[in-house]
Length: 195
Image (cartoon, rainbow, N blue to C red; front, side, top):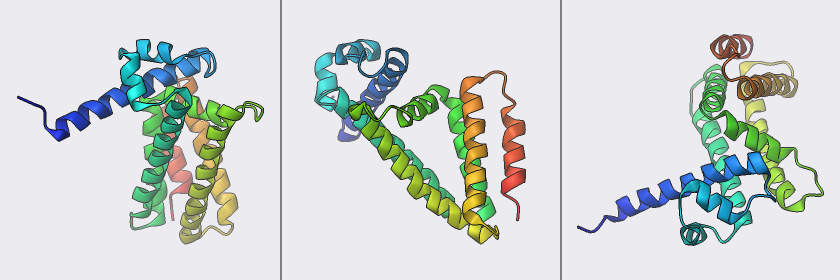
């Protein structure tokens, strides 16, 4: 019996996710430039032809990975904005960010690494810049949340919040088994998400 269109799409999305996961692992371990498409296809357990069916090359794969990450950032903020109070919105951001890093610390490290690449590496730096630009847009939304929460200086408060949250995320991704995740999540929520 032939597959339905939905089944085909599900299989397609699973294969693409497998390819992206393999690419993240290899880009982190070997570096973007030292990783070949052949390396990615072997690590993902898919044929090179299938990989090329989805992505024209390594740069297009990297671009799709960054596009997916930007989509995730936007989705988190849209869900947060849909909540009733700024305290709930900020709590949603904390819980989503912390839980996401706890589930996939290597993914957080990969995108952080991408944002800190030297500008001379034009291929990689342009994708890091896209992430930075999207983060800046999301930061403006977050500032409005702090404004509604009643912060006397919403931008400064938002910067402090982002710095604390990024620090927690970095610690989780660096020391996933030793860092007191739940205690730190409770602390940041208590410090920033109260009226």
